[in-house]
Length: 284
Image 1: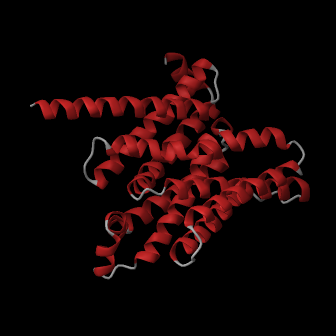
Image 2: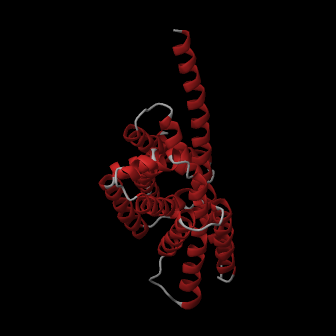
Image 3: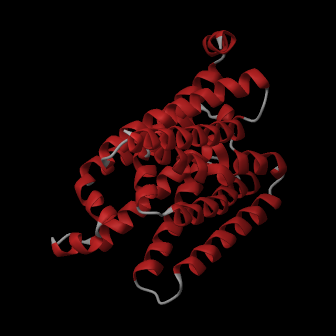
């Protein structure tokens, strides 16, 4: 740990990675709590895998056609929002089974991204980075974009917290109170899409669902209200990203995968602790 702290002071890329992990932890804790409570993990997974299509298109246009101002994160945002709106419309209005639509969107997004990256010179290295994360390669410009999206997610989630809280636990009651459930469902999907884009920079497309849901699931075991769950989930996510970065630096392992493995271990420990606590309460 001492070596990691010294490296943080010495190397700018590690400081950028640490700050990025802390920034995305805010959105991860807030939106991930909604995802866990509403059981939207599969929807979030469909959005996450569509992100690769947008990234691949952006990288292809930048390198093959000279669109130098097109950042891959912009392509990721566009793809995530399109996927969120499409899935939302299907779930609200279409007769197609939602799981079928999500699965199709999931596969189409991944296939589109792979094809675009295959047509781009030097795609192999980029493909691995986008699939499994490249937090150590985050630039100052990427951090500025991440910070802007993080602020949008935070302000929106706080501004509409009561409405999102209502639809998360009882949609029928929310409708009876005059809340536009369909609108806030779509808004939540948009927040999920933006959060997914942020997390892709940390753990990649393949592992994003783990980091989106595990901190919130851990927090949910120890906090009763959604607000408290969100606060604890932010702290857990920050601890996992920071700890994973430190462990990966010491062991020279891929950072994204290390963060997710650490999160998985923390989830197992939280489950055992929660069971032990429940058992002691029953005995008393």
